[in-house]
Length: 448
View 1 (cartoon, rainbow, N blue to C red):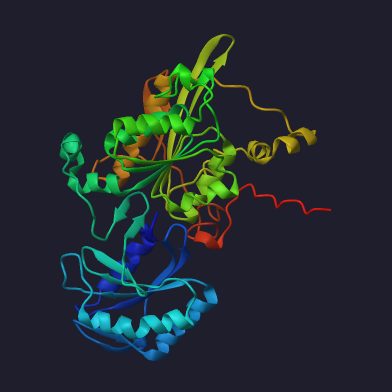
View 2 (cartoon, rainbow, N blue to C red):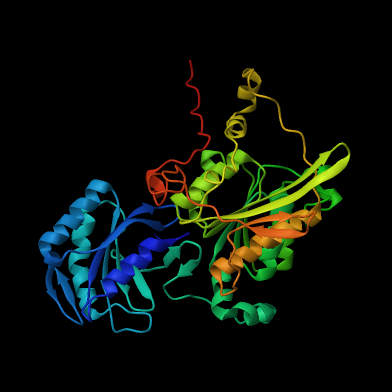
């Protein structure tokens, strides 16, 4: 996700504190981890400046002391983080715009911060009662401002049109702003099999314009009963290429990146921070562990889904599905004990390592799979996404489906204190300053 990313509580507390100033402008400072690949800033801290930091302050202008700005630059350089200089326009009920006073102040401070702060792009931000705006200090280009939590909220202006006739029925449901959001988001779909192909099909119909598919596998005969868009002549082709073909047949204007690779590998996992929204459609515990941490580390809202049919003594005993959102404030897969450590270890190994380790079992037996169950769970996941990014009032963020009873049950799970993946003590909002639990690229052997 490009742009400036706040967790939901940090943005709301920060904005509320700045705007509660009895009609005078307020200033704040945020520090963020910058990701050059994603062109994103993940906010680590944000707080109003202390009273002694103001040189002057009134209803339409606020100036900070040079000594305080030196402290900001020093802190940026020491931490390696970008500094975001924030102020309010308390009387602007629309999307606030930077004033000429703002322009002059940034023209003086921006070059100084570039010289004395961390060697990353720094930002300026203005907050009004109902919206905000941000821009880079070096070139003045606009930067989107996102609030990430149970909802994904874009606080800066939404670009693009949403009036195409093909989207008319959707616009009637969740409005033009909702349709523009869907068109502007870069979706990542991890796994292009049963649930992944259905999810991708629905994104194409919904009018998504940018999707990246990641899957290492080729189509086999056994995939044809549930991989949407695949035909017998596709056996041997990469799953991602077949799903890409299907999506672009539905929506020819789509940009679909097809990556044939495993997200547990370092060179593939680096793509995760550039997504705006992720769907996990794989049964691999290792890949889910990687994406689970990335969701909180890089503040990318993610929906994980899984299906299972249990057969015992030639009878079906369970038909179940699970859909769980992973985002700041919500329990992660580690908290809900959905990940199996031994399975992660086995899947992270190379084939040579598995064969050499006498304590590691072979590959798992294939599980039963039916397209109707995949479609049900994928539809729950896509509807959950609509409840996150549009006005669709779909509130659950963790659901369990029982196909035998025909019931969908909502679950409430709490974040575990000190969780390594989703708490402030762990990976939450750490951006590129933390490493993902990926399979590292092995350095080539030196010639003898």
